[in-house]
Amino acid sequence: MPLTDDTKVLVIGLDSFDPQLAQAWMEEGKLPHLTALMAASVTGRVRNPPGLEAAAVWSSFSYGADPGIHGMYDGSRDRRKALAGKSGGEAAGLRPLWSILEDAGRRSIVIEAPVVPDGAEPRGIRVVNWFSHLPEEGKSRRTLSTQPPELREIIERDYAGDPLQGRMCDYYQPRSAAKLAWFRDSLIGRVRTKTALATDLMQREPWDFFLVNFEDAHCAGHHCWHLLDPSGDDAAIAAQVGNPLKTLYMAIDEAVGTLVRQAGERVNVLVFMSHGLEPPHTGLRLLDRILARLNGELDETRNGIITTLREAWRSIPLPVRHRLQPIRDAAKAAFYGEGFLPSPETRKCHEVYTGERGSGIRINLVGRDPHGLVQPGDEYEAFCDWLIKEIGAVRNDGTGEALAGEIVRTRDVFTGPMADTLPDLLVTWNRHAPIPSVSSPSIGRIRHPHPSIRTGDHSPDGLFLLAGPGFAPRRLNDDVSVTDLAPSLAALFGVHAGFQGRALEQLAPAPP
Image 1 (cartoon, rainbow, N blue to C red):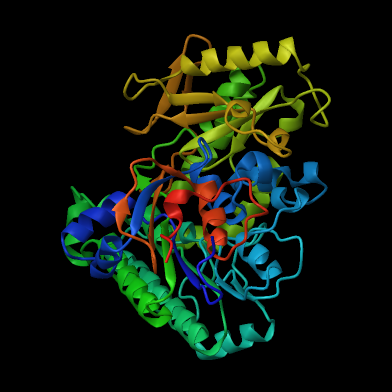
Image 2 (image 1 turned 90 degrees about the vertical axis):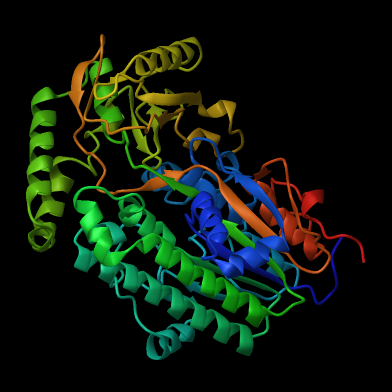
């Protein structure tokens, strides 16, 4: 049941803010505002879409639906042509939580929610592509956009600009002490600037639902993870810059405290730590070579040239690489696409990007894909069985362990109108150690052409804290699906339609 007509909800998104690190640093007393909020909250682990965790967490949160319904994940931008140029959520006619609340007459302000398409013009305030992790699709830099449009001019005039100049963090690859210090301080500056805008909008604009998302821990997790437990050269760097992740988490904790204070005591607050961090070892782009060799489709000469060129490129100092980037981009577009093998439409199956924790396999199925090569029914089922068996036999030459930790049929975990746009199989890597090369009786040995440039990557599950009038603090024993958070928040306003997920009784306030 709804609370009252003056119900307010503040959502603070902490993208890739690792729950285990956060709880360890709470115990050290480094995150006092999150500690106090947790003590007053309903708290629980968040279960993200299996095999597509980091790739689909925000679309699943925003729509209250899983990828079988919305079809959106990191690699879905590569499948837009199959949807007549539309993204999954748009093609499925879905509305994000804040738009559904606006349809019910509630006023919303949304700052930097990861972009999810909406089937109608927004009626609330929006700030998009300001300090986000990824630029807009197909662009090398972020471009701020707002609703209303004139808000952009105010932000650009009155608030600090992006010290990363709109570029993704991977562009900088900070490794020296000086660059890591600049990177850390730049991210902290972005946190403070975004907090200032959020508190200003809270004060001067009417709102019922307010969402502000911080993606800075995401960037720091990719490029500062190695300083959590430094050794060798990293220990010398850590002696100069400290622990950038901890310092940033402390700045974000301060932002949480500021926002909660500004919102007021009668506001319901959800803090959503979307997913965590772990070592970056990955079979991304290696899988495409494995599939091609299994199917007798690998151009060994071309693959050898690509691998050699990639290694030569990474040996060039980063400032020189930045100057040569336009030439490299043109050559890459002509020779291969983002490290994957060319002409996937001519192959029986190919790798699909879903992040670095795992990869998807898309089968060119007759009647579904424009260039189908595998017949549906028995041939498709046998091909899936064969792929699972063969990939399961591939070993990491560095450890002798299986390359894949898990391989699942996507249809076993996701159903719905967009399920056919997803990969057919989802492969999750064993990430205990680097993956220099792999081998099996069927593929021989294949060197990894694209080891990760990151020092940390994503782990699957998140954590939420929900506090406010009527919520008694407690820790839930059962995990909560990310798809149930939006309908549970909507239920606080008396809104119960528009979601695949369900409003949970555990996330309902006690009756007055």
